[in-house]
Length: 221
Length: 221
Image (cartoon, rainbow over all chains, first blue to last red; front, side, top):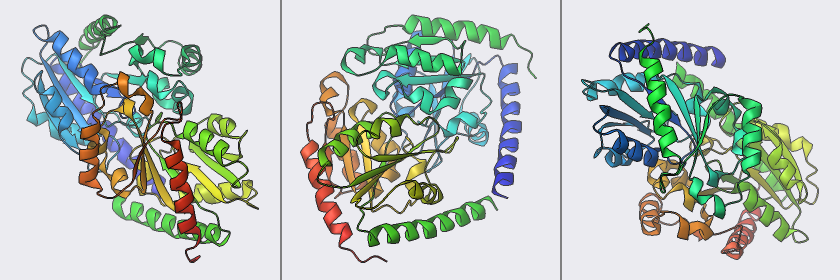
């Protein structure tokens, strides 16, 4: 019985997510969904990304957290930002995104970033109507998080290895990281980045540009 | 209906957890449950802890991960270790612990450590039959994880601020950390530790000694 309930919830979620995606695609809006552990650097990456594309793109952000509006407040200087508080829920779902959308003026928006709740497990199974899953892992977490939390890396459209500037100070095996990642996903692009030093950020911006161009030329349904 | 199901699941879990706790307490076994984000340093802390108490205590470990037996393999040189693979589940539950216990020889064991799945949300609500919740947060995650994931810090019996040796290299506000933590939990002890340098580890070992003495003199039911 428990399985049936969860199954129905997921089916309803996916139907709503599909509606969201169709609607946003019809408006030419590209939607990346950022997923990682707490503290991997999603919000800082978004600060740098929003600043970089100011003037080039219209941008907006939906941010999920269990509590507080701190992330949306950090991002508000750069772009329209809506904070979703899940009140204990460990991931965003399509209904939360649908409820957040009317709080944004999407006129002229080219990219709508979704920053999921910090969690390597729960967010992976929920379609939010996004176009791409952006998976982050920081060098301070350790390379073993790839093999131990496999689903995210299997489904990721791009993997960002963040806080790369801290590599000299932490026991992170880059070889082990690539070995485990390639065993799960042979083709996903991996970008080593640092929001602090700017290392690798141009490759991330290029990835966004190329992927956005691909997605927004797809048919709307 | 969905709420009812979850409610029943939690009630069943808690009843089983109470049985586990009673059984282990009758054997004089103290059970800390370690909870944190992925990569906060639970396994490394356990390596140091098991090594420190070798000869003083009989020790055993139950480790939860979505996949792999890497953590149990890391801990096996120090103590009996059982790995639970949750196959996608974001936390341990009492049934998993009950199934793991027969794989351990508890004769002469004084402390049974449980290392939960790396997750700041899901594990918090599940009683595993433990005596204490040990909450870890690493300085590399950022101090805002306290306010953004409030429940764990409210319910923690001790908070370990890990990777304290990396403080010079990361933008972590110690003042902000204590301010947010004290707003949620006025009394929980906080220990700043580094498994790499050994900083603060004696305070952690002392905490374990004192808490174990308190718990194992409580009545068994």
